[in-house]
Amino acid sequence: MSFAVAHSGEGQKIVVMKIPGEDVNVLHTLIHEMSHARLEHLYRKVPRGIAESEAELSTYLVGAHFGFDFREDSAAYIKGWLDNARSEGKDLGKENLDRVMNNARWLINEISENLIM
Image 1 (cartoon, one colour):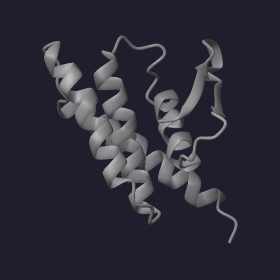
Image 2 (image 1 turned 90 degrees about the horizontal axis):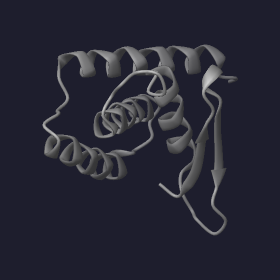
Image 3 (image 1 turned 180 degrees about the vertical axis):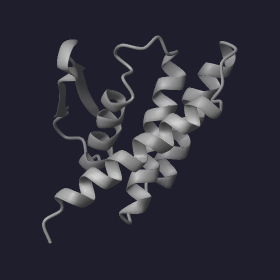
Image 4 (image 1 turned 30 degrees about the vertical axis):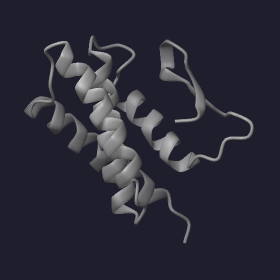
């Protein structure tokens, strides 16, 4: 993704800054970074490959719910990070998938409740 993202410790403040000259889906990046915050990746000891996979799978599910096709970008991103995690002997398990589903459900509900139609 072509964004600079900074996390601050307490309060999980997320700062997303678009890199000049790059054309990337801002919504995709925002959902991904919100997922990191909701999944508490700053505070839990989770291998980076697993954390990135959880956040990106959440992003894909939320985007798909609202009619956005993140499939191509998400698939490549998840594959890359899962390959990394597997090289370290880690993989997504049921607990990770449950966390992803709960996070995606929460984000979908929050976004739906706050949509202005």
